[in-house]
Length: 106
Image 1 (tube, rainbow, N blue to C red):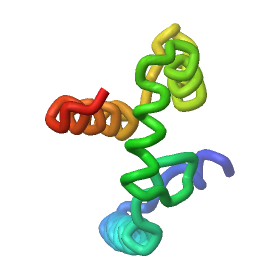
Image 2 (cartoon, rainbow, N blue to C red):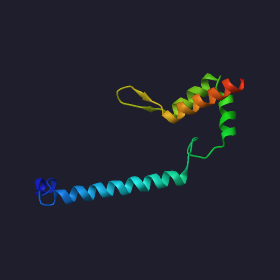
Image 3 (tube, one colour):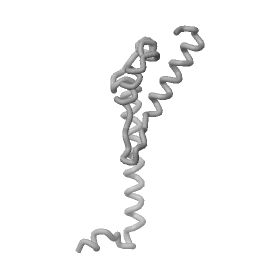
């Protein structure tokens, strides 16, 4: 009985693939709509003004302990020992550093 449930009869395979494709497209559209409605949430899932991010980065950029805390709270540790940090976090740090460099603030 279990092997019968794993196999799709050849007569309905094309229809099944179409249903899966349509469902996938609908889910993708819905997720995109939700993401657009929510907008960017750069700091612990909460909306933050650009001035607040700049002030926070100015505060922690030279403090080793604070930087470690930021990385630890955002990092994901893989079983093989790799550490993954969200690209958005790194991009935000680079953007803030460019602002300080271009603006001459330190």
